[in-house]
Image (spheres, rainbow over the protein chains, first blue to last red):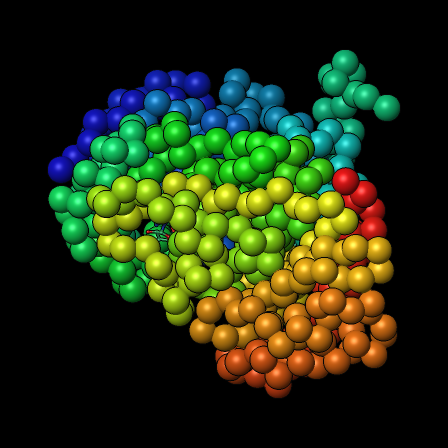
Length: 165
Length: 293
Ligand SMILES: Cc1cc2nc3c(=O)[nH]c(=O)nc-3n(C[C@H](O)[C@H](O)[C@H](O)COP(=O)(O)OP(=O)(O)OC[C@H]3O[C@@H](n4cnc5c(N)ncnc54)[C@H](O)[C@@H]3O)c2cc1C
Ligand code: FES
Ligand code: FES
């Protein structure tokens, strides 16, 4: 039996009929054409499919679409909403050269956004721990770690009221 | 990797979930965070015709502390919530630490401590500490409520004391006695993110310099999490010396029943049980020294 679900994706309300066995990853990519979110392993290991569900970073490959009824989903497409100005995390990934093939990038950026929401000045170890659920086969991670600390600094500058000593 | 087809319900009350489970019988599987269940279904290891999500049941969510009854971790409390919960970090730091050492950020944001216990992998990261601390599984089913001490809950790999019509509602951890301490130690091939190759939980209660009570539980070295009862006996009622701690480590290694697999050889596991047991009891003792109440 198909289920009618209503949820928001990047702020827009979506109402759709889904089969219970469809993952959120399949619905985002195949029904909503939001292909920024990738599918790598499909089993929770690589993090390429990471999205924010009610603000928490989760694997969309392990999330049933029916289970997000009434919830809010944010994908990489929602980071630069205006389509012109990139999110500071995206900007930093470009500046630090943290992208090679790019397959892990969307998931990495969603994990980075989640981490920086929890901790606005993570040290290197905290950044690496924050990426424990994301694999990259290309960069060797150093530029990704660097990008996230650059993004942290620019977010702190942009929102000085959030900075506590 | 696509999922096999199934029907789905997300009841809002425990009674409704129990009714659906009783009606559907063996066809049905309950789901908490789904991080074990969905993976096993994708691999074709499980093909339930009906998945009952517990996620919308408000009464299964809360984490609460009571000065007499102790800590209650609701069945759908997420690993990340347990790892960062202020009261758990203060009163049950080893429980928070085991949750924090489970899986990765995203899986901790989805998966639950209850699911880790019900999944009953021999390597379940949260089992050894909870067993050592004397935790109980609180269970609801067709015949009403019951509690099972965790060291009797595990029956074998992925086998538990749960009947097909039963649901774990919470994990209850007693108030840590005065002068008690606990510790969780684990090792895995790839540092923090991998399934544990060996894990050990210990809890001890001291009276002056004498150990009054001790429980040691070993994970990933047998078909289910094991108590190291003989090692416990070497330390109980004693004022510990370095020799005694060494013998307890060796005894725990003898009690372990490890196999060789992709994560480690049986021989390595046995040696690491020795090392981690010593580390766990020493850390538990030093925590006991810090907890005067
Ligand atoms: C990438 C990855 C890494 C992982 N790393 C680790 C790790 O390092 N250490 C570790 O221990 N585990 C690890 N796991 C396994 C898993 O994430 C944990 O066991 C998690 O705690 C399971 O919780 P869950 O809520 O997702 O369980 P679910 O998948 O929802 O359920 C697991 C099983 O328990 C049953 N169940 C769940 N809740 C109840 C209930 N209340 N009553 C009755 N039955 C119930 C389900 O039917 C199912 O059979 C990992 C998994 C992934 C995907
Ligand atoms: S595709 Fe989801 S974790 Fe790899
Ligand atoms: S850039 Fe290729 S996987 Fe990370």
